[in-house]
Length: 153
Image (tube, rainbow, N blue to C red; front, side, top):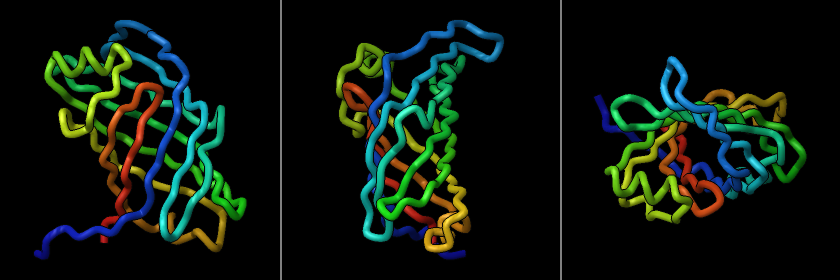
């Protein structure tokens, strides 16, 4: 086996509407974050995150971690529509989790936020996105989230 190798895909910045607290469901504590827009910038592709084009159905699990289930609609600078979906996990100490929940910008080095994005597009130019696996390393901001995404080689 060889070691895992990757190359940068893009930096994704998304702004979020205020949290919608669904509450304690049979699956766990459910919160919904609606995406209000953003940008993605990379060497091979860049564009915008469409407003009203995505959400995160966050599940607070019994072990204190949070599980993400996200769907976002992207538009490349050349007009291609791209569906990005990802699952992810965030966990932090109780003190850091409270700071994040309060809307404080907490450096990503203080907690774990990782995702596994996949892409779907009809664009011939960007069809290579349909055939890759990627990973993201993230950080919450006061009004959103930022991820550095990497293509797994």
